[in-house]
Length: 313
Image (cartoon, rainbow, N blue to C red; front, side):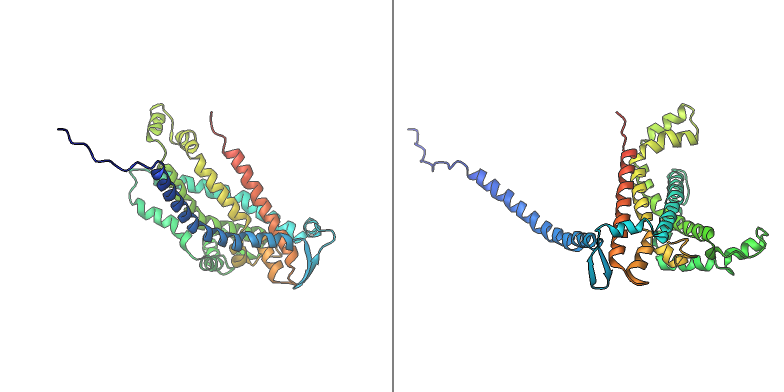
């Protein structure tokens, strides 16, 4: 006789669905538990001060005696007639136009050279070029001030080689003071950008380089027509970061030249610091200047993204 199976409890439809939904909800809540504190900190420490600075930029006065300007945009209008601000804007643009292209080109060339498979002591050269980036800003500024002093090492070498007749006051003349700052920026940040290009070169297809060589392309043609197009995203990234950093440049202007002579080497961020904490502090006017810098950074970054992000169809 065939045994009759014991009756089983009826299945409850939707139990597995509810269990999965509960697990999914638990994971979602866990994620929000980690995300919300960080989001609140960013909002309180970053976005709220930005809003307060925007409101402050429409006020005038000294210290705590601030009131809304009439008209509200008077601080921004005042910037257009501020000779010191216009000079710092011009100086910052000079740093941007001269230093950023030279730095990125030097970093790209060094990255290509140090990426050659047959190069000996690769780790040593990479570390040596990147090392200035790890040096303290104050320390390297003091070293450059000593090197380019009137009785410093640079003048001694140039005079001993009969390249100049007498010592040059490098930090006391507008053109040479700007040149010293540009040299300092190149020395410190070229290796930093070189690391990005070295990372990008790891994604360059070696077959394309080999094909170019088989077709008879020389090193320069291979570099310009094969390597550079494949590094376009990394070039765009470093260009945006370098532009952003140059427009907000402060340390070199403050530590190397103190903005002199006569504001000739001062950057906009240095002038912002001076307006905020020195010489009759004017927080409303300084806040307006900070938003002008923000606008310049945003506009130039947008232009670079539009120009550099033209993908081939």
